[in-house]
Image (cartoon, rainbow, N blue to C red):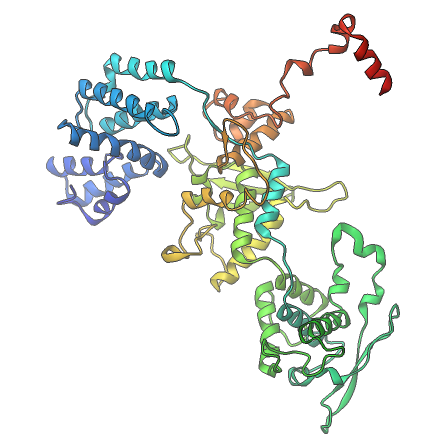
Length: 547
């Protein structure tokens, strides 16, 4: 019932229909006791933040079943009669036995108890579970029908690499991408000195001379053919300066080669030959999808958009560094892909829950003053309901040769934030949500924790992740995977618990997953050769000799 409540408390009805925060109850009590409505509202709003949205959703799903059962059985849901609750638990146990996927797990049964207790506490009613028989009934269910609890598959570092790679995908340049690359490399190069109009009018007939293979000869273009200002220009063949070994390092194309307009024009030439089937392409060099030539305004727009994507100031002629940034921005993954890859990395490295990832804002991430990595400010968590917060340090992931590892969070975050600002069309502010929705009516809003949890599900199949028996694949596996790597690497459990914002180290036992379930088999520690030496058969000896 929301009658007589201010708008702010009425809006809570959708997310907290059972008043698990107790805010609506307290407001009514204070007004009834003579407090002014604005004073009561101010005080009641403080109660709203005490219970996490995740807890409200979890308890709410259990209370839905309780209220439906009470309605069907003509029972009072609140305050509940212990006999009715015991009757409900018996019905719940019987119902679980008939489920196609098996009986309820003991933890699920316990969650009904916590939901009912939480509701009565919020509404200032006696807890029905003060009746010890109800506690014994819940415990009895676990002892009678208990089974191995399913756990989230721990995502180890190699699996995380595959997930991130799958999220980013294989970037292949289209004919238009090749065109834009050539425009930036050629037209924005001050050493060439070509205008937008001259570039738009270029045809393949205007290529007077291609460089000979393996030489540093320039490419020669004829500009403004047949006009008063007709002239020849030489385009530097920078790719000739790149050693063969440079191409092989980490599978990357050196930036010097990417800045080479000659190489870019060769790529465009090859794409035109492939599209038309001609031995020698003809017509405009820079063309639209319909093969007609672009306008001089379109040439300029390519450079303007390239500067915008790279976050640099537009200029007709760009420095080598700025041209490089524009080219890098041209072939970076889409905003959606960068967002998902960064969610996977920040969830793993900072060992964050879904709700903690959802709550991050742009200003919650900062660089370490000594360039060792990043700091993340987790303002509130499951075990920190009062909001004391915690700074989580994430070190750089660096290879032995000093290069950044593909899993380096700062590298991914830098690309993502640049793309994010371009997506918004404005500079980012500290209060902006770090991750936003890109689809439907909620596009542009903070990404919900459910949507954060759905990210990993999009990539597990293509990345080849498989859950073992008794496991399932979920976002929680990123957190479990980091804990497994940390504990396996020798990090003390106390440090892992602090990092994961746990109340104690006791719960870590259930989160320490072995990469191989057979790692803790006794065969790994026993000297079986010595123990079974006197039991070897003739066949065993012959087999070993043959080896």
